[in-house]
Length: 260
Image 1 (cartoon, one colour):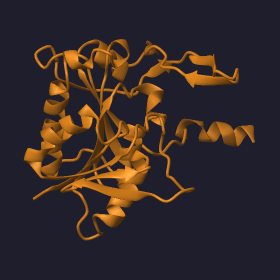
Image 2 (tube, helix red, strand yellow):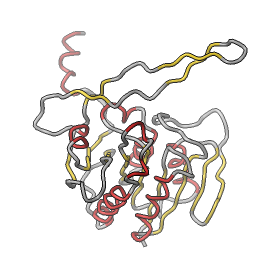
Image 3 (cartoon, one colour):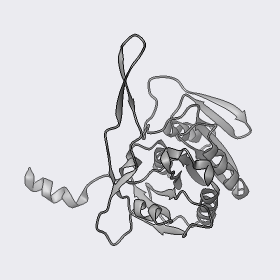
Image 4 (cartoon, one colour):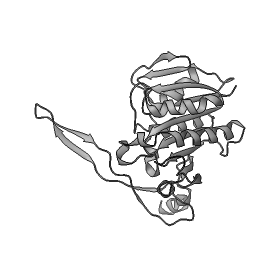
């Protein structure tokens, strides 16, 4: 039986995680290791300043107290698996909210998949794009996400992962029903437009503190023959972006040499 390891950054009780479990259980043995609490925007971070503890909640279902998605994958591969019996695939999600454009650098969801490919295991990060800051996610649920991930994982478990080493698939699902979807579209990472949504507040003792808010999902149209992830979602496609972990700007190596 194929072995599937999954994590997320929304916590072990998230609806997206349970949707992912439901979609993948027919395809193999599913092991879950997820953070105890929400770890959104934690990036590719390991916990180095405190000990971590596995808490077994059910057969093959663990929460990691108090770990990040990267911790979950790193420690699961050391504690629950060994070199001779690694997972066949690792899936991170289904995240509540988009992970497109430069947001992939913040994303704990994408980070879980990053850790997987660093360890030599095929991986997918999957996120459900929302409308209105995810307040209406129950209007369309995770049905399209479940169909999409089951299709992709079935292909990969048939020994058909399309990418090389240290590369992953970043999947974003449009906020529409299955019937409205136009299918898959292979995309590039788009260009996000960021605002400053830091809000100042004062506690009852008059001490100032800040909340970092959730800015609007704005993006910039950039000329290209390849559709961006933002464009695909806006047009009703499931966006699939190949991501590689080599962040070198290869086109600029000669320019920097001359500059030096």
